Structure formats: structure tokens, C-alpha cells
Image (cartoon, rainbow, N blue to C red; front, side, top):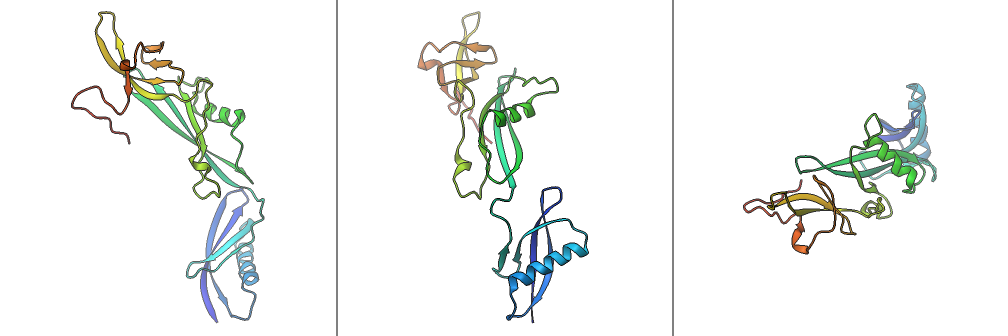
Length: 218
């Protein structure tokens, strides 16, 4: 007689995955897959656990069994990045995560985009000047490298952080942080600005214009 501890994965009645561990006793002359499943289902009945048993794997060896249908639903996590400029000149970056339960990943379309925009908005539906920069499927164990793909979501494309040189009413120049779109449009704390007069009026955000200071991103 052999004994191993198995971890059972099941989908509960709320549609979420959960698990439990139990010891399985067996001999080499039985159908171990059927035996393990029967033990797991009996445990769920005795403990009034509702749901569907999907998988079991030994915590002591490489034995693993699966009874999960190919097209059964699962959790897909999507992550959106929002950015906005705040009055003190800094960039406010927010990451919003949402979970969708489906057999396959959802298509990134306008409906999905609106879900995320609604989540970043306040009670009055105001997005508070946030721009949706990217939206992607955060799936580290997926068969496809879709977790590395980011999608442009605004008609203007995706802006990048820049330092913008501006001139005040007294004629003095200063550098302020801003967002620059592919078509050359710029937004700073002073509002929308036209195309810079020259390339010298912008610089990469990592290239700090203030001596003795450097940009450190978390």
C-alpha cells in the first residue's frame, strides 16, 4: 500500500477556482486516475463542497491528473495603463486590472476599452483627464506571447513622456514635463501646445535638464 498527498483543484459554485489537500492510499494494480478522482469527489460530497473537480496533482511526486474540459471557462486578467499630467508637473500613472471569465481570451475591442475607462472614472463619469495608454492581456502562462503585446487605444496613437521647453510671459525659458503624441502635439500642465519650434525644445524624459538630478523610474 502506498500513500501520497494530492492537491485537488476544483471550480466552486461561484465560478472561482479553489483547492483542498487529502491523503490517497493506493496499490499498483488499480487505475490510479479513476481512484484519485473518486476519492476527491467523495471528499467534496462528505464536506458539502459544491463545484466541479478539474485537476489533482501529487505534492510528493510528478503524478498529475486532469479532468478539465478543453473549452471550460477560466480567468483572464487584463491590465490597462492610464496617464495624466497633474498641476505640480508630475505624471500620474495608474494601472487598472480586471478579470474576465471565458473559455478563450477576449478580443480587445471598444466594449472592453469602455469597461476600463468606466473603472477609472469618478462617480460622475468624469475620467479626470486620464488618457488610456495601453491595454494588454496579462497571461504569463499563455501558449502565445500575448502578454508582451500592447495596443494603441487613442486615435492619436500612444504619447511618450518628454521634457518640454516653454517660454513664460516674461520671455524666460524653463523645462516642464509633458506628453508628446506621434503627430507632434504636446500636452503639459499649461494645456495643449502646438508642435515645438525645434528639436531642441524637447528631450527624452530620462535626460533630465536640471544639472545634478537624474530620473529614476520605479
